[in-house]
Image (cartoon, rainbow, N blue to C red; front, top):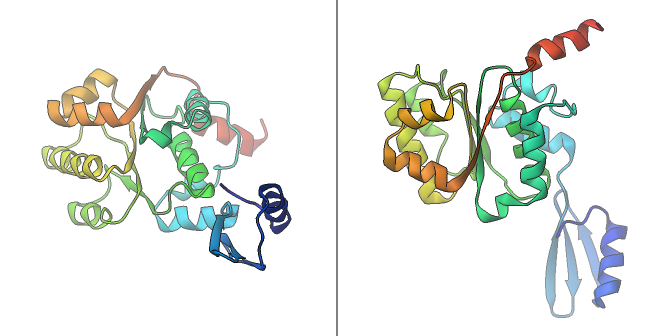
Length: 227
């Protein structure tokens, strides 16, 4: 249970009939000292802390700059449904497919940000798959509990497809939340991966393919120009 303020916590403790001697507040949690021991209550992370964590995790500044904008896109609506229904509780991630510019990366970054804020995850990482070399991708995997694999498409060279399969296999076995974007269609993405890896990805994620729409980058440019 998340508790936002000390006053909210005190109200909760009174309702539960909890006797306590004191409350210690830290950045991300409260300690409640009771006769039987210490209880911990988590606090939502601040916007500043969420942003700092995402920056350290490698999420692109171009996405983070617009993270708190309520942009009307189909991927963002899908993320709201995912969060509202709590599919993350059952270990499901998200795979978004469709043409470039429909808002896939923005929406999945928003999902990661909300899970961070609510203390569901603690160590996310962003992997722009078309840009990172082999060694750097591998170095980012060990301790993360949520991974966003961005820009998986049919033009990836064979060694990157093999690396992708190794990563997905490892994430599946560790029960990490998997988020993935692809400019390819569902059928194309299925052809990229071996049957065994596709089966695992399909088991652990909710997949959605989006039709072409207004390019989100063009829309944001219009907003900056005031037209």
